[in-house]
Image 1 (cartoon, rainbow, N blue to C red):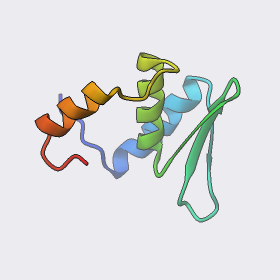
Image 2: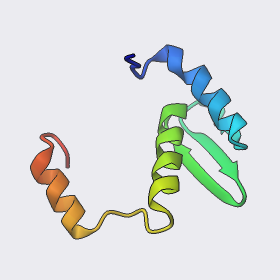
Image 3: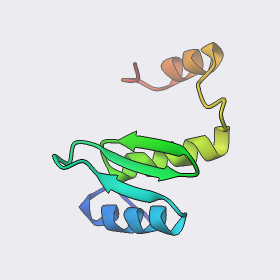
Image 4: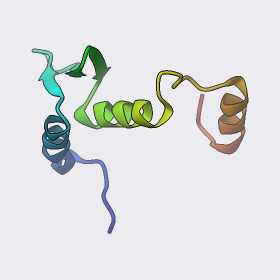
Length: 82
């Protein structure tokens, strides 16, 4: 299977967020999307970004920020980052 982030993934992502218990809203101008649950709010430019932020937080917890060592490794490994 191969899934690519595109227009046809946005609705399934919104449905997934809602099924995970998030209240999903879009700003009137469509510039920002938010997902909120249990006093935590995520904000991104698309539903895809919301799902990515939530996944990162679920995996890394409240100490989600990268360490200096993680930043250095990623900057060295991935061209175009930073």
